[in-house]
Length: 290
Ligand code: UTP
Image 1 (cartoon, protein in one colour):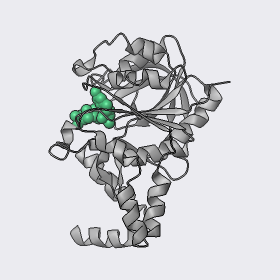
Image 2: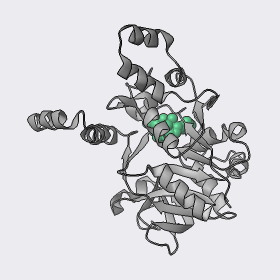
Image 3: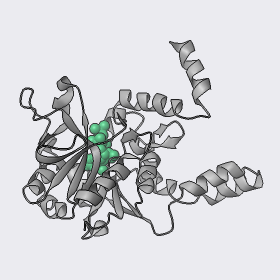
């Protein structure tokens, strides 16, 4: 039986250059979609999937992320004194349990693979989930990671969530090559980062949710640089694919790449329209604008 996945890694040490000047002093991961920071949305997804320990790989200027997952005594006292019980309850529900978070530093943003490697001691010798906080997946039922854990319970190995994109956009992403599957879950037989047009093995792109076995850390420890001079997680997965099974899951839901301005703005619209307390009034305002 596959080992249970208890821990999730959230790499939050990047510079967020596509969002300057917003990200000059504020972490990209704290940008809000409606009224929750991106990192909170993604932690919610992990919590819903049953993750018990939340590991953040932070860097300079990211201290506010640690504060966000802590109590704010003065604020709570003021809310209590003013009888704002709904707000207090909300803050309480979002608070991770004592001892269920860990923070480590990536001193230099050398790439996603390097950020993941920085979490090796905290993860230890067990499978873990990896969630990119600037990618939101909106679902009607189970969250994306919960869907992946169902597949993991059945197949074990390593799982990557994938999404079909239009053919002319495939060159922008990591892409998988797949064997015969059941329409939803496919064995992966190859991966390529940003394929040259005409060489794409499929239009299924790697979107930012992974379940990985700890052997990935041995491969990452070689610190080999790939595309853009960065240590890439896709390169390490390609090496691990020689030794271990990987499965691609075409999850149910819609992805927003909130690291890009259009993705972020669209996510705000989609998440606001899904909120019963905001949808009607928001639709009205949008109608007036367009
Ligand atoms: P991105 O490449 O989308 O983030 O990485 P970035 O580098 O911060 O953004 P741009 O491209 O300059 O605008 C996806 C996630 O991985 C983290 C980022 O913080 C982001 O949440 N990351 C990336 C790290 O933690 N360390 C790195 O070296 C690179």
